Image 1 (spheres, chains in turn cyan, brown):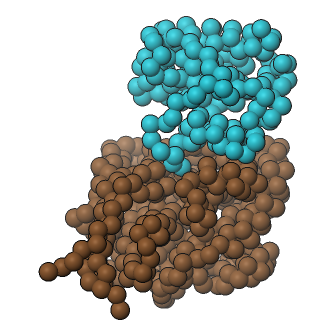
Image 2 (cartoon, rainbow over the protein chains, first blue to last red):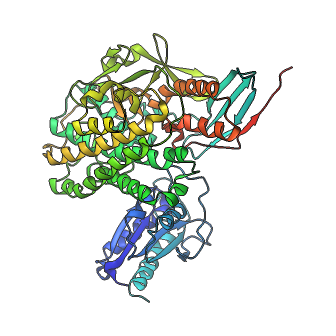
Image 3 (tube, rainbow over the protein chains, first blue to last red):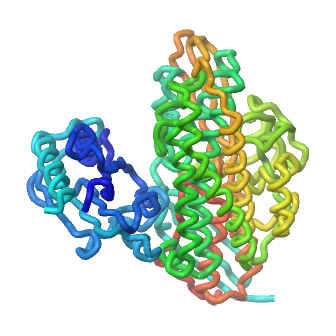
Length: 154
Length: 434
């Protein structure tokens, strides 16, 4: 597991409060010298492009916001290839190709990456134009540390 | 002659961006009721544009749609530039055309592969399609990403681009940034040829009509933004005269307005209309490919729109390659434009058809009136008419087949209110009238 073979994806909308945790983590990773060689992508809305963005020999980390995982700022790690992913709360549409659909599509096409780790952060406030809440802002460093550990193979 | 009685009541159209339902009632072989109900609450964009600055519609109206934000930006900018009395440089115009190509590629690719093709092949969704046709679906995903990459490079991001402004762009991309797109464009162009051949091989239900096809036409090249509003029945008007010839009505069963021609009749806008009015302006390789798969200058079976949409995708990839090869960064990236009192209107070709914007401003640029007529509202009466014709002509179909074909009839138009219509809880009731 090397930095060169790792893709880190930050999912979310920076203009929607804590939903911006993904983009915030990517910004932090890009400023982190130890992770300078990691490939990074920010994804908002439709995630289906990821199926043809990652490669089967890559280790992929997806950082996303979640609802229902404890107090705001709680960080949870999920194995995206083995653990069940929550279904979207609405059927597949052109406006929302979600994470579970994306993994299902990649599996059908034989384009799953070598590993897929989802680091999810419980949100507090996702209001329009709100900043990250304090506990979620504090979680950015923890998520970056987890990505660093994953990159180091720990 | 059939005396079949059928009542279909579909309360919720799922997999939709908007919210709608469909009701069909047939008594003794006569269609007595066809309604495509749109009950999504009004969004009031025109109302809350009032009082905003003339510089804001490009960003505000982009939020109307996540699939065709460029169309909203282009119609808004061109209407306000017409109001301001300026014409953008050729370089800015060509860069806008490239941005629009990105939107057509992405939007058409999504609809052809994930929303429409499953209907023809008996799959429930694009995910099911992927299992049986992995190479096609992977090619479609790459094609869609190519369109998104164009929008990112020119517009700043793929969804709701942020680099568009009245007068041009905040920043012109460098030649190198656009040339980076060429390998993906070449790959997707090759795939689009396969896509056209693939869709042309589908089996198409019987339905044909002598539509009034309405689109832009400029006489020089396939239209995105420039040209007059024309139809195959002789309409030929300036964009600014649109409301003299077209009107929208409220109907009781829909919060979406229904468009019609003032002189009477309904229009059909979108790929089939563009094709009917502009096929002679396409590059030779697109014309040759169309001829090769049996697509003539006019297509009157709406189910075959998937083939024309695929041909337009091929054209947009071709055009994007040409635009990048000829690219000269506009300098300045935006024309100077000052606010003034006036009225301006413009039409551009969204993926699903002509999109009209009108703005009235005060001397300081404050907007006092805004009017937006999207393609889907113009197509809604035509969709209902297609449903009526289809049901009348296919009462012999069994329940499942009729359900599928009614859904497909709606999806022929890639309606923006229902970007991915799939019906839930369809009931067909056979009734015997006393």
